[in-house]
Length: 342
Image (cartoon, rainbow, N blue to C red; front, side, top):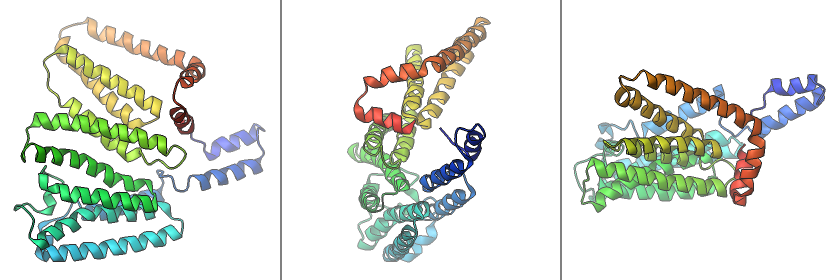
């Protein structure tokens, strides 16, 4: 439930609360949510600047850095990291949690290039690949960079406890699943295996996200980024599967509908968005392939759509009673999570 200034002063006009209480509540809510990311100009500037800085040291690295050699890359990364931690501590001392979290995340994102520089300096880099390939190709020897990033990420996240720090950890877990499979399969693997690895790695990350969500239900939202990349990996691997069976395509549709249900239950939009895309994709398949020349399909689909709308009306009328009964059978931790998130 999003409470705005207008909601509070409407309540004051309806004499449910006094204007003074409306002002006090508004100030209280603003203090409560000052560290929650919102679509405000200040927060947009925070994340835009932070993502540009992070992107400069990750996605947009070019061959010019190779001129510094391994020792130079390691030294520059260490200097950047020291500056990043210094700024993080200064911002944290001033209770500027969001920019502090972005700066701490910047430090974690420096870890792969620092490890790359160290390996180049020690002469143990195994081939002719360069750092800019890290985000483009799957290779077994990225594992050292990924394991190092996870270790540094966990340490910094444990120390500073900012939710945005989970973002590089979630991305690295996704990368690690692919590169670990490449190592176990002898250095390379085909697309079929990649799709399966993405699917099952996504499931594991979703499970991890639910566990984190339950553990941190009374704190900040630490599970957000794990859900994002877990659902992306799972849905991407699922959608990339090839099959000529209409039954398997229908099962894909059912799984996407289940994702929408899970998203509503857990109040996680990422499930709903990807589930809706997958469901629409299946309906497009029915319209363009299975019922290409059928006049009855659009009519039946319209009836189904209106039926779903009617189901929504019934749900709205009985939602509280159904939710109350359903939550009685849930584990206490999950019930508390749903109550706190709703």
